[in-house]
Figure (tube, rainbow, N blue to C red):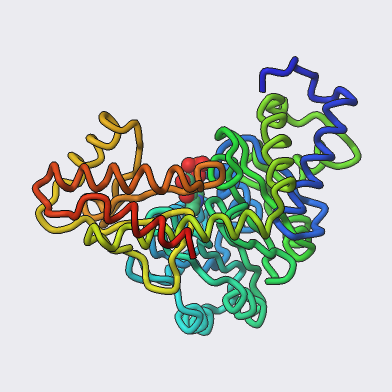
Length: 363
Ligand SMILES: Cc1ncc(COP(=O)(O)O)c(C=O)c1O
């Protein structure tokens, strides 16, 4: 990011834009030509997808089982869509039967959306069945891949996802500031045949596509250094190899889970649907979760997240994303949690958590 700045139409920068698009297509497992980084964080990508695919009055079916499904519903309402929420308890995933029932009760569904990796709960949402249901009912499928991209498989073309957005600061291990999006042929057609103008000029994909496509028409000044960073982050992902990266995330998650057990700690998301990069841990009764988090930060230099919404005060959220999904992070956070729990008066066997994680790694 500290490399000298280039102009946003400089041939060298234009070349870099092409590399970013190619690399994004690799991580999204897609051939979609319209695969570009939106200027702004993950929420900008969310908003870009919703305001381009929905017009006032369109019917939108959205899975709500955490903060980010809730946010999608809010953004779509502001865009004038008629929003049908399909809800599941926080920590659980949305069932295809629920989506099917909602689609049957919707006259002309335009778009279905769910969050692939719900960062507020640690739930890992399966996508292919829901995408098929959306198509069977004549709707497009949108997926929030902010936390999943680069940490678990995201197979846009194979799963029939019409549009998806992500963020740079999660498993791509890049500073925050860009939001990769990908639009497939059906989604592009919907954007092209809109009856009304996209309410946001800044996020209008037809205009952005003229800058990121062959025309190179100035729209807004690209965040140059952010694109340097994204290109380098994506290059590192490809250098490691997607499969190796997914396996690394899985292995570190399994070791963390093994180490939490002797501390009497359990993961909050439903069994079999737990994300490897976001581990929501249930806080034991009687423990002041904020005090433990504070101690981790002050004494050990480790920041973990607290719960959001209904999970506030009830869970800790331990991120093992991208570069931070490593053995040293797992062993260090387990030792620190042991210390934090003891300070709270819990009886824990010294060293048992780290030993259990080491045993998991030795398998
Ligand atoms: C699943 C999910 N969607 C959307 C967002 C919004 O992204 P940002 O905070 O980068 O705007 C986040 C951020 O944590 C997220 O985890």
